[in-house]
Image (cartoon, rainbow, N blue to C red; front, side, top):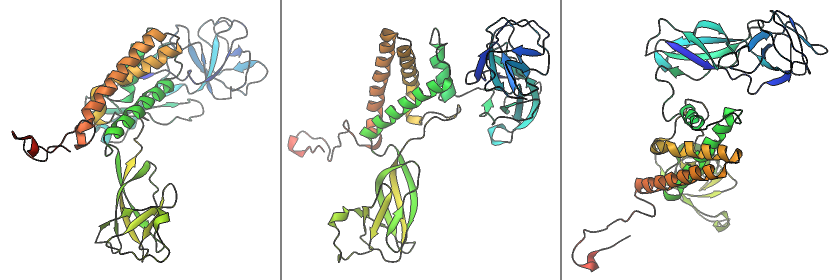
Length: 378
C-alpha cells in the first residue's frame, strides 16, 4: 500500500535566494536575507520537484547573510536559487487498522523528498480496509504539525473538496499562477454559497436546524447556534411536557397591560438572536426550527450536500472560470462560467418540487374531470 503526501511546504513559506553560487559539500549557505529563518528550522534549497532540490536543518542562529546547516549539501546550487524556510523536514505516516473509526498510530517516518512532487511511504502490510493520516515533523526539535484528514485506499470521494480541486487543476493547461490551493477552496465555497442561496429561494425549508433554547422568567431567550439565520417556527413549553406554537408579533404591537395565555404564546425580537416570549410566567423552553447558514467545505474530506452531488461539474467550472479570469483568458472563462450557470439553473429546477413548494409546483385539490369548474388550482 503506497501512501503519498504532496510536498507543498514551500507554497506559503518565507524565502530568500542564494547570494552567490554554492558548491556541493558545504555547511554554510550565503543568502540575500536571513529574516524569517530560525535555528533548528528546516530549509528547502530549490523549488519542489526540481532534480537537485534538497532539505537541510539550520543548526545555529542565523547572522549576517549566512545560514549554518547541520549536514553538508549534496549538490551544487547556482546563485539566486530560492531558499525556503519550511520548518519541517520529515513526514510521519499513521495507520488505523479499523478504518476511519479507529485511532491513527505512527507506522513510519520519512524524510521529505523535495526533488519530487510527493513523499511516499510503502505500508507493506497494508490492507484496503485501513485508513491513514500524516503529519510533518522536525527531526531536530521534534516539533510537529497538526494531523491530516483521513485517507483511505479509495482516495478522496468524488464529492469531496479535494477531488473537486484536483479536477479543476487538471483542466488547467498551466496552473502555476495558482500558488495556493486555498484560493481554489475559496472559489468552491463561493459557488457552494451561490447554490445554497438558489436552493433556499425556491425551498425555504432547504437549510434547516433545530435547537432548544431556555428562556427565563422575563421571557427572554438567546439563540447561540453559530449557523442561525432566522426562525422558521417556535414551539414553547412552560412545564416541560406540553408544547404550543408561538406566534411571532412585532414588539410595538404588545401593550403594557396586555394579557397572554401559555396555550397561545407570542414571541417578538429584541435583537439579532434574542427573543422575548409572552406570557413571561416562570420560564421554560423554546423548541426552535430555524433557517441556517450551510457549512462550508473546510477539510479536504468534506463532501457536497447530497442534493448538489449531481452538479459537481458546476463547482469545477466555476473554479476554472475564476482561474482563467485571473489569467486574462476571458473567452475561455466566459465559456466555463456560462456552463456553471446552466447547471445552477438545472439544479434549481430539480430542487424546486423537493418540498411541494416553489414556483413550479401546482397542487390539485380535486381530481381532474371534464368540467372546468371542478378544477381548483392553488
